[in-house]
Length: 380
Image (cartoon, rainbow, N blue to C red; front, side):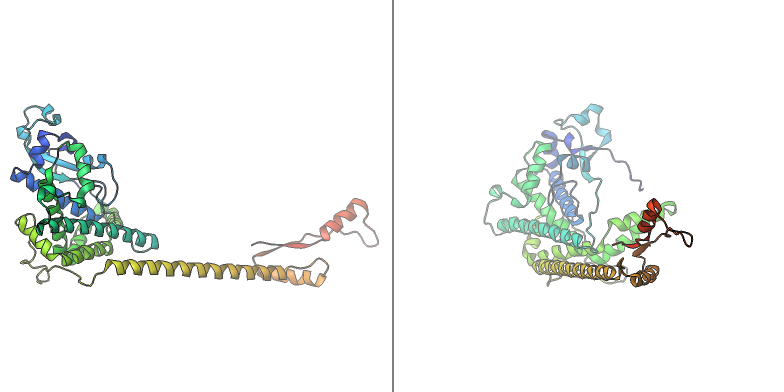
């Protein structure tokens, strides 16, 4: 358990109309900054594969959004408590967007199902990245006016926000969100996997002594660095392909909200650099995953076929080893086999006998004949 500082805040459902205009309006610098923050949140959520806030890559509910995105306010500027629930009251001093209940949903790499889920997730993320850069490029190349831009890349988010906000963000507002997404991804690949690995190591070790084992177990179940490496490389690959678009977008926001890691040094004294793999090819990765999956299926089918053949062979041998009732010699041989083979369970019982010189008749004779018919039970 981690204790966090309490911050006075309201939910998104408590923001609408005039209050939403003050919160996310492009006519004031604070509103534009919050829109950038909204884009950065979307970028972080997609990197973590967290769908509990926005339906960017996966479907989610409006309740999830309203419960996981908060807006802090100045508690000294609240004359009456009921002011908080008055959505259209603009007198509440709103501060910053805050996220809660964020989780990492990493797909493991130790089974075929998780690998296929990873490919599906990366395909959705790649489509989202292509849409983001396409929207920015058409504006950068002046192929469309800002007021006529539809912003297809975040169409689902536009519809999603319109319900709780009851306010049209305008094309300029959506552009700020798209810029924020680029800034968020830029920060992620600027950090690089080396720094993320050190960060994970440090966080993993902060659990209190009394709950250290449970903390470490929970952390290890949630974080999969190999999964993050796949996502990081995909984002870096698209940034490499769209460096002119990225540069233009960062210039348009004056590098606002970007982290400065280029002039700093890490613990080893090496300058931080963008970790971009220019050879990364998602389509080739998909083909490799598909080939590996087919190979795995074929191998499993061959192994199952071999197992069935071996089982049939074993059963045939057991049947051949079973004694016939008309061959006393085989009964003795079967008895020896039964002692060594746990799959053959002999069913022999003592025979009814009569004193020397006497004959069994009637019921006693039938019981003797019945008991003398020895057999064995083969269990498969």
